[in-house]
Length: 89
Image (cartoon, rainbow, N blue to C red; front, side):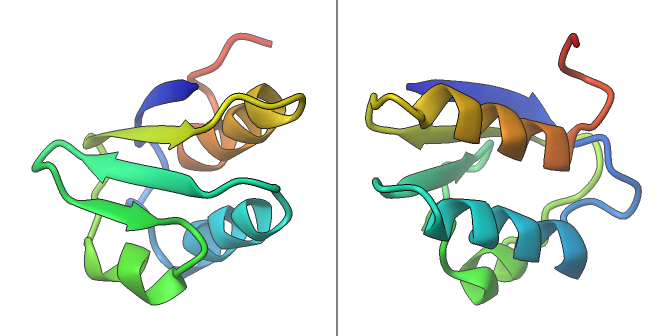
């Protein structure tokens, strides 16, 4: 299961959104991987690995996890962190 997200948060993926992504990933039963446009892949439970990507506003990333009963909801919540106004309500 995947979500493609264009980052719209001002200042990109800085400490606060990355910490929220890690919190959501840690609460999910399956690994969640973020893939950048450059092909870099990191596990979202690693705050330092995500911060090292230096994600900026306007970049597109793919969030991916194995299908499960809660996968859609957790990916939607993560998309909201990176692009709060992008997903229809």
